[in-house]
Amino acid sequence: LVEKLEFDRQFERYRYMQQLMEGEIKNVNEINNILHHILKQRGLLPDKYDSSDRFQPLLEPGGKAGEDAALLAQLESLLPTMEDDEDAHKGMWDIVCELHGRESVRIFKGRNTDWDARCLVVRCLIVFEFLQDGVVLVP
Image (cartoon, rainbow, N blue to C red; front, side, top):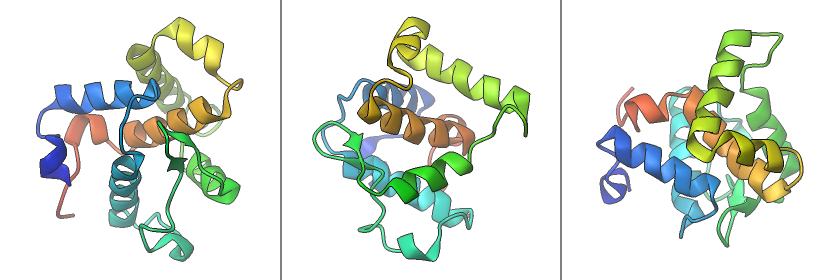
């Protein structure tokens, strides 16, 4: 999957994340599988979601919010908060604003559950170094 998506260069990863934010990804199961792999590799995946078939923060078409609210809440809990790490929290949102545009983030944040879910996945990818390192196949 990683080779198929050509994530060997940072620009492709950046562009892919932009497309995800915009809801332009043709197959969201690809990004679900990538995030599943990243979280599993770091030991952050609850047993309930050990199978990638059950791990669906995003649904078709175009990245609609998954129906498992508990999964979305667990993903949110993995992200830095202003109280835990203000610099990491602000940096994560700065990258989201660079990807999607500051005004677009301001307009959509908290007003569109599908956008919020896509943004959550993108923020997880940012925090777990997808943009910088891509998908590391061996720990």
